[in-house]
Image (tube, rainbow, N blue to C red; front, side, top):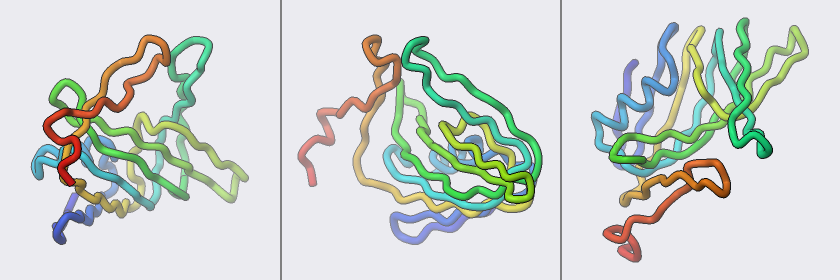
Length: 148
């Protein structure tokens, strides 16, 4: 992984074999990014995507292997219990096989290259589990509220 910082923006180039969430988490920790947005494109050889089952209150995930182009990858960065929390969705396709899969990104291994952009937002929000919804929802932190 290589990356450069341009003000509040980070350009991250991932290499073959690197796992997307691990790399993004590492950059966030190094750069102390508590809140931000993520976008990316590239190619994955293995990707695990999930869709939330509202009846079971859990993600149902599938792993896909092969040549997949990242058609879209976007999400946000926050924290939960003091640790980096990434909430990222991805669509990945293989036109030769006529396949396109999308959902919550659980794991993605770069097969050729990955080009990701992170935008830092000055502030912080935390996450808190909601038993009614079954997800970790955004919880605003008093210290950062209304300080624009």
